[in-house]
Amino acid sequence: MVLSLLNLTVLSLTGCGPQTSKPDTDVPAPEANLHARELYQAGNFYAAAEEYLALAKADPNNEIRYQLGATDALIKDQKIDQAQQIIDLLPQEKLSDVQKILKNTYSAQILLAKDDPEAAYTLINIDLPADTPRPVLAKYHETRATILHRKNEYFAAAKERILLNSYLDDAQVISENYQSLWQNLSRLSPDELDAYRSDNPGILTSWLELAIISKTMLQNTANLESAVITWQQRYPDHPALYNIIPEIIDISRQLAKQPIQVALLLPFTGKYSDASIAIREGFLAAWYESRNDKPIIKIYSTDADNVVEAYEQAIAEGAEFIVGPLQKSAISNLIEHGEIKVTTLVLNQYDGELDTANNFNTSALPAIIQFGLSPEEEAKQVAERAWFDGHARAISITTKDERGRRINDAFVSHWRELGGTILGHVKLGHDIKELANPIRSALNIDQSKQRSKALRSRLQRSLKTETRRRQDVDLIFMAVPPMTARQLVPQLRYYGTEDVALYSISNIYTGIINTRADNDINGVLFIDMPWIIDPENEYSPLNRMIERYRKPAHSAYKRLYAFGIDAYRLIPRIAELILQPSRQFEGKTGYIKLDEEGRVHRRLIWARFVDGKPELSDASSLN
Image 1 (cartoon, rainbow, N blue to C red):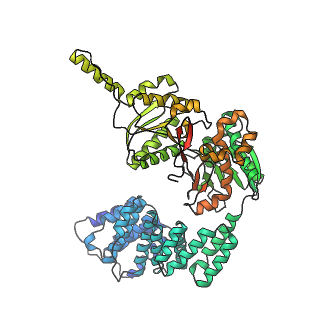
Image 2 (tube, rainbow, N blue to C red):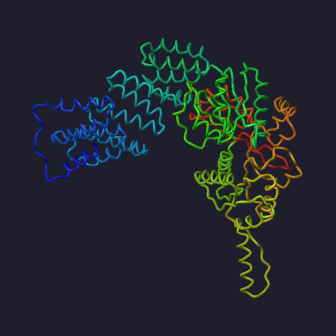
Image 3 (cartoon, rainbow, N blue to C red):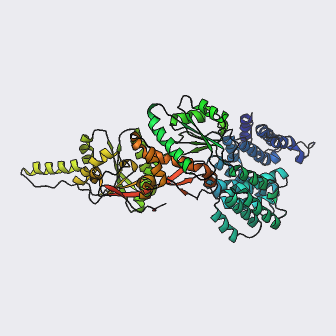
């Protein structure tokens, strides 16, 4: 076992004195580790480590060399703690210059395995002797490239891969290195690639030009192929010709192909039925309005219990893209128990870690794309805007249910990351008659009254005193429903908060103008989707279409109509947004971006209540 051999190694290093025995002269030193190297190259790293440690014990003259070999094999086998033990026992004063480089390299790999790329980079950022052997240089540069990638320094990692290629001899390893180089460049935006191209002449220029072509033309296969032909004429012997360019063209053809049939999976029974109808109507309205080639839409009633069966049925009936499900429980069941065979746009956030074990999707797109109307994301955007506006000390007011807890946690966490201070959190129940006590407590009104009472008692005479709120707060963040807000804001003003900024997420507004009721929340700055607060949407053909056919019972679900619209409009844009994370499109639910992991991010717009109705306030701010 490795552990037993490792213990023997420890004993040999901590014994009474230096060993004087010589290696077996019948076996030439270069051939002694042949079996260990064969095991290593075959991927049997654990057995290779055993073999190297046995050699280290039998051959004291080459002990350090074999211990380094064992360390390398253990790292490859992810036996990080055991590799660390060997590294810690190596006597620094006995190491040659080359062995010191290897020790630093393996130590950096260990730190990287322990998720500390910064420390790993510091350790490996060393000068190399001019006579460093090629295999050692290969390990060193490969490790540096991996660390830089983990540090999200993708261009620096690509440059390191170019250096590494000079020290590689195996054709397969060279090909894999080029693939890694290409993956790093693919993480950069077209603007970044163009900036690096002007500053980095030489071999990198050709790679950067190809990456720009890929980033900007991947969805238009004809233009891509034409640009690639021109590029090939300039670089006829480029290594990307053999593997990477065919892969780019294949991906382009996949991405350019739009689904012929789309399945919409929603729960049309139970408590989510009205919400599902609103999403469906928005989705179909966007389909009717679209002037492009339209996919066939098939709709399935789906809940948490039947989601896997409905998903399989949709695919069996020809679905090439799926939208839904909606409930978090249904999404969890699908991801954890189903087979994801086509790109699936789920209409909520998945709380677990995505596992590729059930991913049978052959598309170049992510298997799962997550799109939700997350109040936590709204809370973070409120924190950013409030900090941007110059506020620093906040009180948070939310409902005292689980949703309120999540919203508060998101706001508080992001507020503190930005540098803000949280002075208190008020949790309100559903009974609006009970607002006064928690508000007085948060503003220290009760303490002010107690001080006045104590002073009168001590002086034994009547005094005219003024109750004062705490003076250190400059922001109140709210996440409460409209009925509560209409009672809460006057209470806050009554206690002298006229100079304190009030910010809210979208749930303060019903989405329907009611100047009489909402006069009580004048002055509150809140975040919401363009569909709700941008007047241009009120007169759009799409809105008129929905208003014409909408049932009165569904008027409370205006935001979900917009959600359905954007769910449909996302489908043809997903490839473009994935390939260019800096790009966004102006959706009805916000300015929409998509990250490389397949999460949709919405940047909302701002309004302030003036005369009982929302008035746009810096609509483009922070977009």
